[in-house]
Amino acid sequence: MYQQMIFVNLAVDDLDASKKFFTELGYSINAQFSDENTASVVISDAIVAMLHTKQRYAEFTKKEIADSAKTSEVLLALSSESREQVDELVEKAVAAGGSVSGETQDQGFMYGRAFDDPDGHTWEIVWMDPSVVEG
Image (cartoon, rainbow, N blue to C red):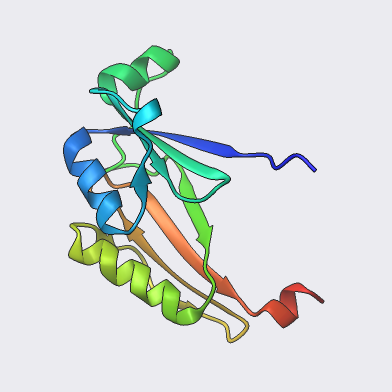
């Protein structure tokens, strides 16, 4: 069966700083699809974050580029294998220059926290109890 992928395109102020941030979270940069204006961050086999300088990003849209430090243009949510992994990733993000966003959400069967990357994009990390997901 074909596995559909998602390529999340984000405008960033400092491409080198953004690459450093995401590699410190444990993700890799795919050099084949990266250059001086774009970094292809491999989050999983099916998820890639395409980080673009604002000049490159502007080539893909006629709309004004949101100032993600001031406005919310998207909430990105990633699943996690465990509650502990949620905490670990958020702690790595803060140590790498990100900031905690919002309050911890603990509903027993679901646990989530969020961080803003250095450009202000909000990433939510969520764990759900597999027994609840399976029904």
